[in-house]
Image (tube, rainbow, N blue to C red; front, side, top):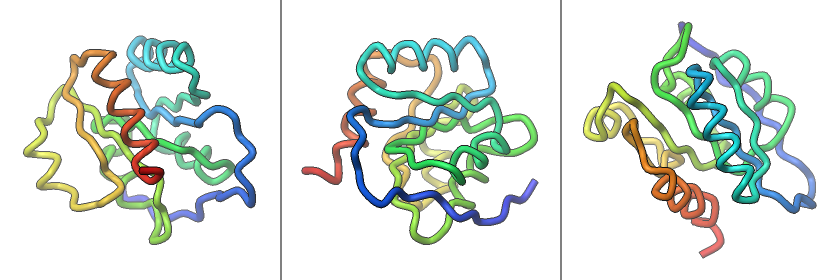
Length: 139
């Protein structure tokens, strides 16, 4: 499935108190675990189970970070990375239980991809990478 580039919602002012994360994960138990864990660490989290739903969320609101599973029903996680548009600066963390980091690095040269995490992963390591990716532009 080939996705077209989309217009991404970018708010006028940043009045949020919590950083917004969009998780795109088709495995419900993993998505729910990530959502609960990150909300418990002070983030506002939206969960999408497929790329089409994620695109809908991206059209209507801004996120500070995207966490995208590589293998999704109907499309590939890289489709989301590649369709995002020229002015998209939101950092991305890619996760996969199938691909390794070298495979992912070969597939993307996109500077918004900050980290790759192999499943199964350590939640503390994920949290460090989430904080690093979100705060990278503030350093």
